Length: 232
Image 1 (cartoon, rainbow, N blue to C red):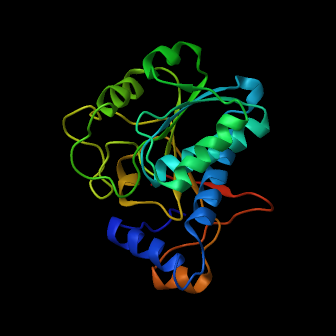
Image 2 (cartoon, rainbow, N blue to C red; image 1 turned 60 degrees about the horizontal axis):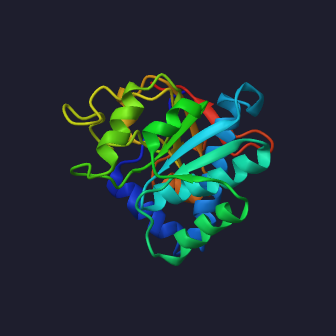
């Protein structure tokens, strides 16, 4: 069964409600999202298949999910490397980055050069709130993601895609359709154009909240924070 989707405005409203009446903090939601990303990667590519993971991190919450995922992946036995060219001064992101430095997880300033020593890529540059033009230094990164033969897991959205209308008709994201996608909380309308393996993560919705936003809670099993679902 394909799950119902959540548009950009509804996704933003749901996030606000989770942090108000839902009583979650942003830290909690980001931790659960990043944990889900790490579990999806583990299902796609266990560490014995190649432990070197390159994580492209954007300046917002989507990037924060990638930073959390990196910490969990390190503990699973992977060797993550972080590309984080626009590091905000916000305390939450600074703490997440420091946690990785304390584990001696390397940061790189050259995304393209790192591709030659990478087994899998996580795209956590832009999420559901992205709109408008892709600004430097990310156009070249997204082009590299599109052109690379290394498999990519996108977090919530393939970077440069519009949440409602999918891939761009022109620009650096034209032709970019990653190997896998993890939708956080619920799939977004862009899954109509997605062709790879699709996971849903973010195991924190109550039944009442799911009903209010007309969402389906996927059939999570046991300890799993993710579930693979049909694309269509």
